[in-house]
Length: 275
Ligand code: G1P
Image (cartoon, rainbow, N blue to C red; front, side, top):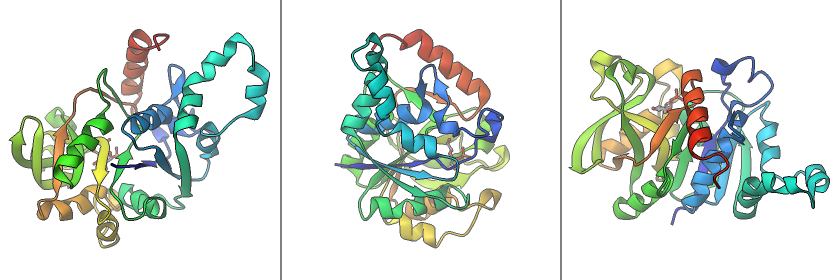
C-alpha cells in the first residue's frame, strides 16, 4: 500500500497575478475550497495519508491551512457555522503533514528530489494541485494506486489533448497493453507539435518508485533549463518500468485562468452544497 504523497507547492503562480502576489496559488479557492485541499483529499482517499508538501517562501498559508486555527475554532464553536469547517476537520483528522522548503525553483524534478527526506525508500504518489481532477467514482490517485499493485512500477496519468497544446505538457508514446494502459517507451517534456510522439499528455498525477531520486540526481537540466521529472522518468521507461494510464474522471487545468473558471462553474453546479 502506498502511504505517502508528495505535493510540489513552491511555484509562483504568475498567471494569476496580482491574486498570487502574497497568496500561494495553491490556496486559490475553487468555490469554497483551496485547490491544494482538493488534492490532499484525493490523496487521502487513495490511502496516502502522509502528505509531504514541498513548499517555498511565501507559502506559509498552506502550512497554516493544514493545522488547527484555535481562534477560529473558539469563535464558531457551538454555532451553526461549525459545519463550514467539516471538510478541513476531516482532512486534519486523517492526514499527517510534513514540509520541506525548496529554496530555488529549478523544475519539477528538483522539487521531487527536495522532497526525498520526507519520502524515503518507498513508492509514493505525486499530485500537482494545478490539475484538478474530479470523478464520481474512485479518484485518479486511487485508480493509479490500484494499478501500481498490479505493475509495481512508476505510473503517469495521461489524457489526450489537441495537437496544438502538446507543447504545454510531457508527452508519452508506448505500447497499448489494454484499454487505457500503456507501457511507455518514449517521453518528451514540452515538445513542439511536430516532434511530439503522440497527443497523450501527462497530467499531474504520478506514482513513482523511489529509484527515481537517484535518477533525478543524474538528470541534467532539460526543457526551460529545468530539471524535468519527465526526463528522469524516461530513464525508467527505457528499462520498461513506466506505465501510462488514461484515467477515469474530468480534469481541469487550474494553472490557467480559463481552466480555473471552468472548474469553478463545474464545482458550483455539481458539488457545492451537496456533501
Ligand atoms: C508539469 C510536467 C509536465 C506535465 C504537466 C501537467 O508541467 O512537467 O510533464 O504534463 O505538469 O500539468 P508544468 O505544468 O509544471 O509546466
